[in-house]
Amino acid sequence: MDYHPLPKCLEIRKSPIEGMGLFATEKIAIATNLGITHYEFQKELIRTPLGGFYNHSDKPNCQKIQASHQDLDCYVHHLFALRDIEAGEEITVRYTFYKIGEFDVAE
Image (cartoon, rainbow, N blue to C red; front, side):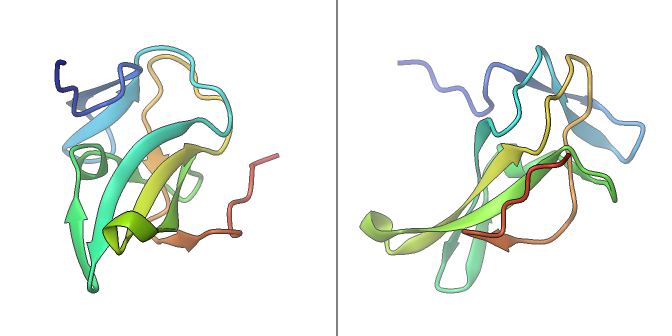
């Protein structure tokens, strides 16, 4: 099995927002789970490759959601699409964490 640090629908490239960013390589549907951005063990965050390259926006197209992972005794932070994202669009979030039940789909 090959290791892929990012979903096949994303790539890293230079961002007009700041440094490097994540960009959609194909259309991503609303509410798609793009994967795990962080693991939280005993209040320490461990960032995954997915969590290292998205940028902030006040009008984000994605949102991080925190969920408990019973098997690992930790929290995991997933990245979900708030709306349909077009190919070539940069992946952005509002820099904060949301917990289960706080996910709001953009109108």
